[in-house]
Length: 477
Image (tube, rainbow, N blue to C red):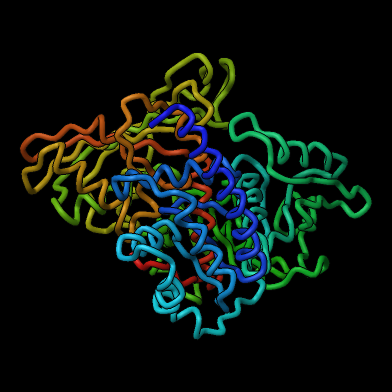
């Protein structure tokens, strides 16, 4: 191919991607149809990101998918009377063009494939959400909910609850606007000092100052039957978290930390079916538990896990000291920025709460390291069956591409990937195939995870499940 042809092809892709972008927004805002491309979210994506997502198709099909191939499908979707759903236009485009040479059968193909959503009059009632706490996870949840906001998305962020007496709205807004790890917020944020609110991409969010749930009456702000997402970690048992349910206007509570006692710990993609309509308090478990449980389920389903040890190499968190100072926890008083800090973790044992067949089979420890985000779990497993590294990698790659766990498990074979490359990953965990070790009935798996953003995506899935927000997904996996 001539040098000029490379530029011409790029400009053609850019033109088609520029045509796709507004159509994605139209589908989402007007119809509640969320368009994906091989599992990658492309609503609100930049033109360059849309092109890159098409190139990503090589991992699934062995060849690139061009925006010219998906544009006709996206155009056709805008002309269809669809109820809210999720459509992976990458998978559908690959399927269609593998069987057809032109667009003549496209309408019939889509009407057949999406028949259930064409015949449905599904309408989702708006549901109020409150973020109790506005730290690392709280602000990322706010970003995700705002990014999803639209006519077809029923979860509405109505308020955040923070400690104090006020006077810091601009500071709170600034922390949402700018983030040293995750970058600038993609949108507009303004402050209403008089009414103690911030307006984010047109979404009015009340800021409520309270030092305990007993101080809050959500109904005073027009908030009713709300899901309160507690990301403070102050209470982790049913007794403590029940304080939220005593607040007028609160109906359910989701904890963004491992729950204690009889609280159901949910890893979405693995055991979200345990969430019942009558459940009032649920835990979304921990970032590490979410990262390792889907992979462990996949391995156990095919090879059987007899026992194992999980070593977590975890970025430092706000509960550690920047420099040496008193800390009630062992070793955590030493400088997080200067040391690797050996500490305990309950993540390995917590797996059994979401995956009972793992009960008593796993041990775990953690090493906190001087990075601000992205962690790695190293799973050293003893299996029931012999397996080679190649066979295991092929299986996990397939699970990441085409299985019910594809939303939780990602896979990479890059020889150059490092932790910062995982920032912003929407998957619970990313298997590093290049590092996989397997011999006889033993294997070692290396699983990257964005312990902030990837975990927050899992939390949002749990929020949707608790509030009855469920979409048809096409094509089904």
